[in-house]
Length: 397
Image 1 (cartoon, rainbow, N blue to C red):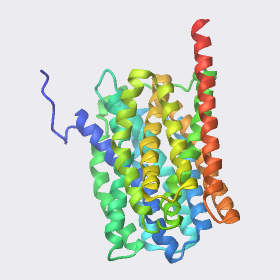
Image 2: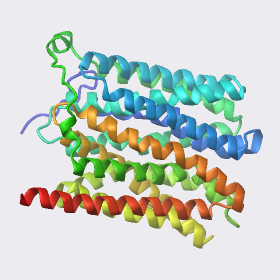
Image 3: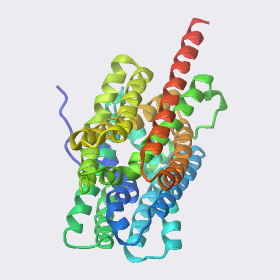
Image 4: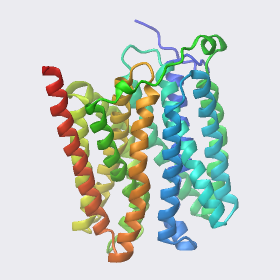
């Protein structure tokens, strides 16, 4: 029986690599992105308007989108490592800006830059983890990596709400900045490569042949999931708080999102291994639609907290499923297809907060936004059903 290496300071230890990857997500995706959702109710009570919150969310994803596009061009390990580190630093500095300034313009710029940093951490960092891991089949291991999204939500929610008991949202941003700084030291250290490997590392050229009809349909489906992700990912606490009798339960719902999200990617990846990625993605998206629609037909507390559980239990897994499938289809250069898919996801993320705010201001509630969002995710299922048909015909010829 092979002895498990528990030396968490060994850069080539699989457990250390996964831990560093999860902690990187806590910084790049949690602190630089999801902490905004945790602190949104508090910021709305103070000086932030809902419409401006939607703009901030949208520009954050513009930054993420640009980072996803940029990641496609990164072809070698040396550059990947460099931009992963840049992403970590940007995630920390932009959080510090939120803690120390109140200028609308500065916040706008910082959210754009934070989005770029988050893309460098999740996409490029994910590619580094995938390259460094020493497993024949990395499916389950990458499921653990993407569980970091759930960990990030829980971490930021607990820290934010803990600080808000005695302090302000600015204090919460500062606390998150300091914690992110110390966490980042470990991730940057572990997700580095030896000089000899850097010198010998091959540079993979971008091949357009990878973008088959099946892959294009997959990318379109991931665009719709970007929409499905971002509406609840930005507004879920406020959606729950806005329902009659549920004011104050929003952050409980968001905590449930993170807790359920932690094991979800591991479970979904196991199901994908057994039943096929596309089949499992369709199931997860169908469950997500149910979760999106629950607040439109009931104000029951348990049902709406269950809505949060369905969201956390699907969106984290869907990121893992799509990203891993993209990485597998891309072969030698996983960041190419992972970046292309995330760019499509990013377009959905940019557009959804803007139409959400417009519909909320027109109708005075979230219902129209949630109906439209559910419809778009259903379109994604339709794309995947066509993709299955295309793949079947391709295998027959």
